[in-house]
Length: 184
Image (tube, rainbow, N blue to C red):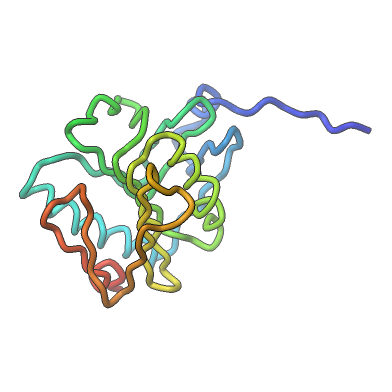
């Protein structure tokens, strides 16, 4: 007996999902339910958001959004990254529905149930879609893996620990402290 191959779901299918209830993501044509993240995950997300938002209040060079926020990357990918940054030069990708195109920076914080998707499939989709910078934040190891996806999508350009600080070309002059990111 042959298995029936169904066509991939599309962004239009995704847009017909109810707005209430669980969070979903469309990844390579498949729907994934995203369970609520744990408290430490939320602490990390809030810490990064506070750091970047504080910078953006002083230097209004772009906008920062946190999940749930739809990022439509192509016809079979609608992701909800933990955080996304869009520079003023790229505001044309912002729509009433969310973001249609590549943000400048995507931050994904690993959760046990979605870590493989973030590490592999979503990272590759982000690279293919034109995302410039990608932070993969690992709460278990307290490491931030920084990728410059348009240069090398497979290997991080650098990895920073809890006791280190790093910078991003998107936020000139800002020193991002690992201790602040992983503060409980």
